[in-house]
Image 1 (tube, rainbow, N blue to C red):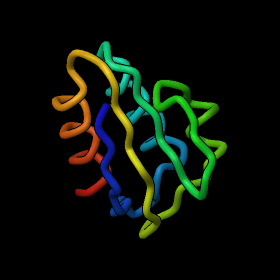
Image 2 (image 1 turned 120 degrees about the vertical axis):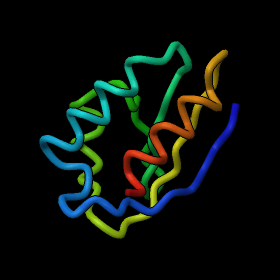
Image 3 (image 1 turned 90 degrees about the vertical axis):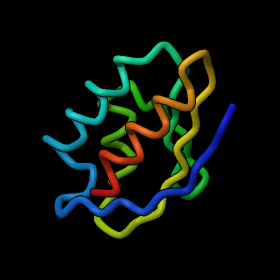
Image 4 (image 1 turned 30 degrees about the vertical axis):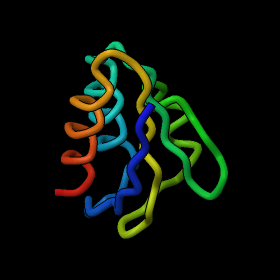
Length: 83
């Protein structure tokens, strides 16, 4: 299991369309993926879970991955929210 604290740089944050794209990309990996914000941890492969965090631009979130392709998944998802 690996964790990484990242700052969301997307103009819209992880709302609506960017959230849907994030979930779609997360589902490409077999690793268990989670996002954590202010102590609330949700499945990164769930659009409803992700939307419940209401992640805006400039906010810090913890990305957590556990599984065979955890490092690749974490690197890819980090690049999605950091650019």
